[in-house]
Length: 275
Length: 317
Image 1 (cartoon, each protein chain N blue to C red):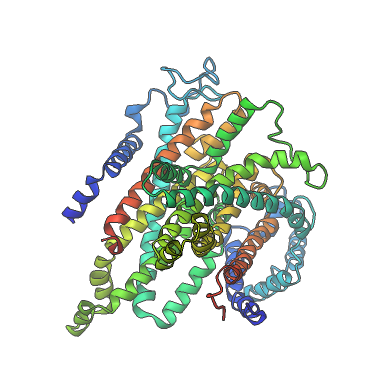
Image 2 (spheres, rainbow over the protein chains, first blue to last red):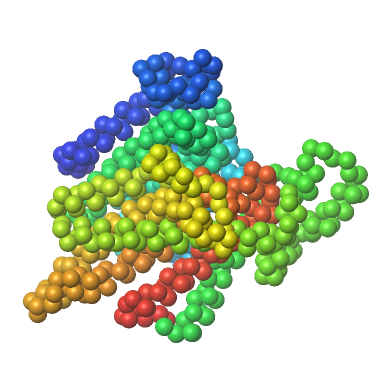
């Protein structure tokens, strides 16, 4: 593993974007340190102000500081995207392991259900769930997470199918290890690189899905800021105050770009096909 | 390409459609409160008997499995019910709005193709050149940018550069084609750019694969002109993964239209869906979602069919 990490960091692109992502994460965890205003405080003497040293990203129609709203919105978006992929990887991995390891009827049922989910575009499925159950933090995490469960299930199933046939799994069976132990010790351990890559690449799309829901006004309701929500509210002032829209959008793009580049980098190193 | 294959594909997609219908049905029933509660809202002047009558009218007094049967029967008969808010038939609403989404999708695909494929090919031919690097960087940025952000940037640029350019104000194609195309230009360019990023990447890697094949070397050695090698021998074989990508992107495209239609105030399916969501118009929500899922299943069959046209080696059984 140590060698893999060193190999990963030797690529300057990976190092740069890992640093960017790390800095963004720090800002998201400690928003208070980096902001001068609260995301809710209105200032009617500073309505729709252009970006300046006072207000780095400008202000909105209520005089709220866009930079503060971005930072706090970032925190919400990171929590939602990360938790939903965590949720999806947990459920999806278990389903994929069962389908791949036991095969037969289990495989058939689980995979057909996944096919059904694939008939929905991710945003529409998430929108459907959020629309019906309301946009609380937990509902958002589940709604976005559900979309990614079939992706994890399918990936893990595929990998499990090949690992199942390896000698060490057969050896484990011979020495009398239980099926659960084989699945969650032997096979899962060998899935780690597949899981890391799937996690990173899907984290970026989950981030975009959350941002799109926010843009449509279906993420955490106002006055709570989310990055997508900021862009959505800003479009009404697009021609008079473009900074309300353009800065939060840029933050989304930079995060997703970093995740995509890291995902590509990880795949290059961890994918056995590229060795 | 056989007629039998088409029939078989349609039959095997029935379980998927049934499952989707089941999923939509179950999720709608998991919602706290039911259609009657939704209709009554907070102002409830009805007596208990009248409420019971409403339940009977909507079939909500029957067991769940019977209700599912009724839902399937209505789906099959294209009886999608009426909108709770406007009183219009849902099927009429869908057919009213669908042409806008269709036009947007077709134009976006057009932009995605004319931007993505030539750039992808050029990057593959001039591998590791500056241009190749540029294409890859642009591709990654395109893949990472939210569509609404790209749309916003395009609006700001176009509003600044071209005064009098119609960015908003949709009119149907049949009414005023010139204005319609002007209004559709930016939304389809936005979506097209988003899609072209993936098409560009796929074209590049697929072309690189093909260009290393022996028969390309043979063609070159035979003295076939360079443009013919690329256009006829290489591109045709590189197209298969690209078409697969088109198939996968259809879902992405339809989801993208929701965001873009709302951004550019286009009266398509996506806007209808969001409106219904905001007004809690349940019959509209469930049938639009159902319609989109159905569309994706159907389009995937069509994409599989196109394979055979491009590659005679693909046999559909």
